[in-house]
Structure formats: C-alpha cells, structure tokens
Length: 371
Image (cartoon, rainbow, N blue to C red; front, side, top):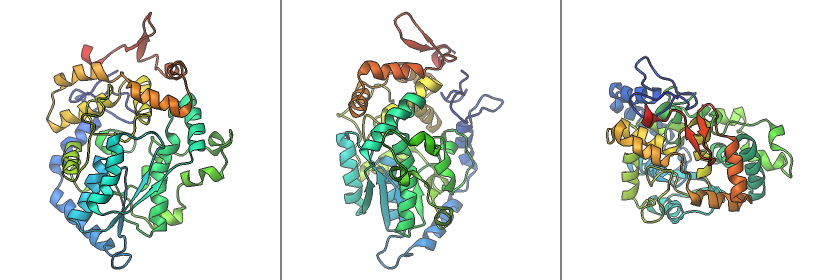
C-alpha cells in the first residue's frame, strides 16, 4: 500500500490517484478551493433558488433534501430554509435497524427545529434481510438494498411532489477521492456511484424476492429524471464536516457523546443513526485496508486541525477494530452467530494487503505507521 504524503489515505481507495509528489486527489481538490470564487458560486446558488422558489405556489414545497437526520442534513436544511428562505420537504430512508438515542432524537429534531415535513421510507424488512445476507456473503456489501433506496427514493419522491430542486450534501468522489471526481453542481449521475450502483436483476431475484419488491430500487424513467435538477450543496459552499456539526448543534443536533464510544471511529458525530449499518462502511477495511478512522483523520489533516503524525496512533488503534455493538445488532437482525459473521468477514480479507498470524488475527503488511 502507498499512502498520500499529505493525509492518511491509501492508494487502495477505489478511484483515488496521486500526483507526482504523492498527494492524493482529495487533498489536491481541497487545495483547489483557494482558487474558487465562493462569492460567485453563492450568487449562482441564489439564482437557482430564485428559479425554483414558489414553483408550487404560495406555501408549496419548492425544494427537497435527501435527508438522514444527521449533521449534514441539519446543515442543508439550515442553508435552504434559514439562509435562502426556501420551503424544503425532506425524504429519508430508515434502515430498520435499532436506532441510537441520538438517531431517534435527530430525526425528530430536524422536523421540529426547522418546521419541515419528512416523508420516510421503511424498506420491506423481509426483502432487506434476504438481500443483506446474500450481498454480505457474496460481495461483503450487506446494506446494498438500503443504500440503493437512499439514492432512488428521493428521486422518485421529488418527481411525485414536483420539486425538481433536490439537495444532496457533498460530492463524495470529488471531496474524498473516487471514480467520478468531476467538480459539478449536478448530482444526476450520483445514482451510478460505487456505493449503490444498480445490480443485474438476476442477482436480486429469488429466495422470495420478486420484481415487484424491487420497484423502488429502480431509477426513475429518463423522462422523469430530465425534469429534476438534483444538486450538490458542496459545489456552492465550502464543505466542512466540522462546520456542519457545529451549525447542527446550534439547532439541537445530538452526537454520541455519553452514549457510545465506537471502537472503529475517530469521531462521535458521523453516521450515528444506527449501529448495525456501520458493518457495511467498515467492510472497506478487509477489502482495502482502511476504514472510518483513516477517512476522518484524512479530513482533519486537510482542515488543519491534526498533523499526520498525530493521526497514526488513532488509525493503528481504531481502524480495524469493528465495534462489538455494531456486530451484535447486525447479527441479531440477520440471524447470524458471531462465529458465522466473522467467518464471512474472514473471506474478504485481501491477501495482498493483509497477513494472518498464528492466532487468526489479521494485520496489514505495510501499515502507515511503519512507513
């Protein structure tokens, strides 16, 4: 593994690349912010808001947010409603896992604090369990069904409610490194990113799952999509996770302080709605040799609040240490024993990146702290 000379990101992150100085694309894009005319971009954003403001008549919804209730959702609603004077409707997908206290509070709070209607999708639990087991065991991607709905459901709802101006937070590929890292305000192509790209129908059917069960996972028709104008807020406003959480807290957002210190995270405010879902994001670790602690220390370094040297012990201690609460909730939902779960995970360790000791413990062959 080769690591960015500026942050902590390895070259195994899908779609990322390094320049001749060994600096990753995410750091290069962050540096490029200094050359952006943010005042001009804000004027562009205001013009778009003016275009759609009142599009459904007085009191009607004139924009939408693909929301989870988390810090970024709070921030997006704050900008659209409190700063820009829009009237957003929120579309969210709940993953059916037991929620944290913070997660339950935040989803309620975003509606109450900002005075917003939330339309929530509770996925078919039978289908979710079937596809979770299938995709976990075959691809190590247990939450594909829920993740796919997170991308498709807001598009379907935006079309039904005639609110073309659909807000997403950051362009993940551009901000953090990925296959589609073009800087653009349009989020129309987001549905085809690597997290929840569509699967061949034959991969999904069977074991009681029918085409009818999967209707919401399909993208809207081209005719419907052409009527929508989904956008990344990160194009118009310098995106910063710490800024977002500070604004969110002013409006009542709760993090996990005093509730849960996750063993594999380096912060307590991101992806905090449920415990079981985090198994999916952690599965990057056996496949690509990095997980949430690497992701956030890399951001902290770009933000200038942590040095690379300070990040190394955090990554060493936390990145591979999947939290036991996440495993417990995941196994209870899917019906696995702990030994079945870890047996499946074991199959996904990349032998080019990891070695296994006599006690069955995996370790990186070239960890960043031994560079």
